Length: 241
Image (cartoon, rainbow, N blue to C red; front, side, top):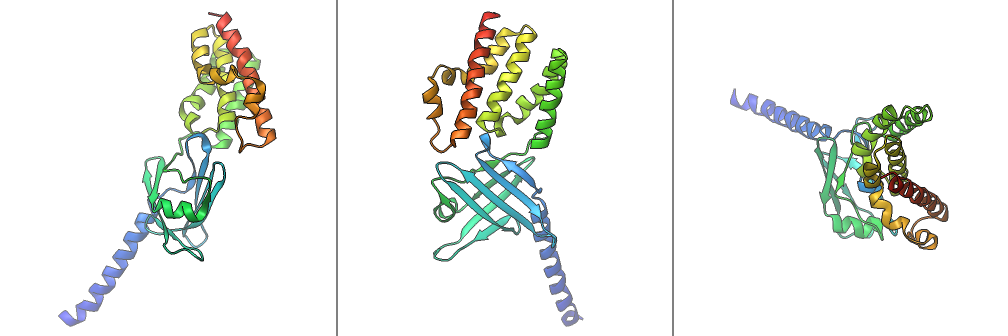
């Protein structure tokens, strides 16, 4: 009887082990995750075969780009000429994902003048379509002079999504929120909302345009437009105090 049960026990162990690995992989929730200020993006999907696939892209002076399969919370990458594997570990932490592993090796082989971010966020209500819809509803309410309702629509985006927004989008969000705060006779809150942009607002236009070497001319011009709006709104808020 003992000899008969050994193969069965072995098979059960293999099945349970496979289920355990599958369970670990499934703990990672697919979706788009962003680093602070959206300089790095981690996208996780499930393909038609049920495999968990990731792509990671970062931008700095240069960029990082890597993709592969996540198995039991880990991804192993190796391309021609590499002496050691690039190992990435993905740990789900509520709505966020922490990435660690042999980061130095990964950056040396998959990045150029850019780095891999350690923590990626996916706050609820903060996808690009959700943010766009909130901004659209805010504008409609603002145009109807329903300022309290307009602020109630935009403030959650500012509070919940602020850390994952790239600087230009965050700058316009601050300006829109500050303006509606001014309309609601909240000049102090208006000034506080714009405070982080005040230093740049005091800079010359050329300094603003040349402040980001890695940015395109188009982006720098858009950023300058946002800073010009900030200068105007700072004056308005200050005058209302």
